[in-house]
Amino acid sequence: MEKNTGLQDGALDRVIKAMLAMQRYPWEQGVCAQALYEAGRDDLWIPMAHDAVKRMDREGRLAMAGGGEEVSDPAANGEVCLRAFEKTGDLFFINGAKRMLEYLLNDAPRTADGVICHNNTSFFEGFSKYQLWIDGMYMVPPFLAVMGELDEAYSQIKGYVRHLFDDENDLFYHIVDVSDGRFVRKVHWATGNGWAVMGLARVIEEADGKGRKDIASELTALLIRVISAMHRHQPADGRFTDILDGDDSFTDGTSSMMFAAAVYRGIVHGYVPEEFGQYAENAYGAVTNDIDEYGILRHVAGCPDFISDGTSAEAQASYIMASARREIYLKG
Image (cartoon, rainbow, N blue to C red):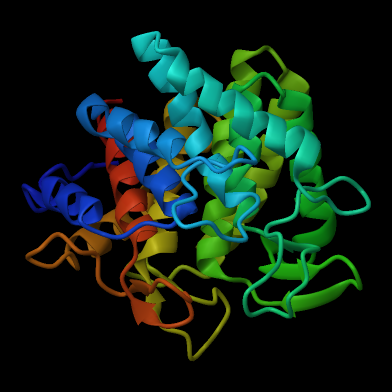
């Protein structure tokens, strides 16, 4: 397959600068820092990890500027705190990571079957704290895995599968209220499935690195099912619609870049078939061509409610992640 390396010189730098200019919620601080870590920008992600610890609340939740209801979202900051400690030797970072871990293991609200809930309360989906959002697949299991809690990470993923996986369509639904089994948002949200595949990829690699072929193999099979299902709904230009099977849905570049990031890293590490590379390339090219002069990704699910076209920090971060893995992929 011919690989195109000549897409809009300077686009990545503009995307990074625009991302750093955006206000950030806890999950956004985490995914943005993680993206810069994966891109090798130590000058940026280490200061972001530092601020995540400085903004930790009394419960141990990272990056909680101003407080809030988030339970799983702050954990998206966890790995960069661990990596900052490994890089600098500064106990400040590892203490922050450990407090985040202790909160998840000991204090975070859980469902009756042990799955960590998404929020303490929920702001517009019925005010129940017993909700699971597929977003959490990215926020929690990868952090648990890198902190030595691989079995707990695996258990959490199995919980998301039990409660949110649509076995007939090989995709995840968005939000369920576990207190009564009611689906709050029973749609195949493209960005939600993007969060899921990016989270799965990170846990697969951690399991493989720890010699846990059993977990790596099972999660790889799940990942392939989801990216295959996403591809079945992928338009010709590579960008998904916000609801994967929604005929009147808007174009969403965020999920396209999340899909591409997972595919590139999976091909590089040998757990995603090479044939998916072209699907990722199509998406990457279309999104790159839709970046504006300020480096902002257009035609993505927009913050803060993510139900209409707009802009978001996670869109910027997903492009950076895809770019970082794509560079390695192209060298292969």
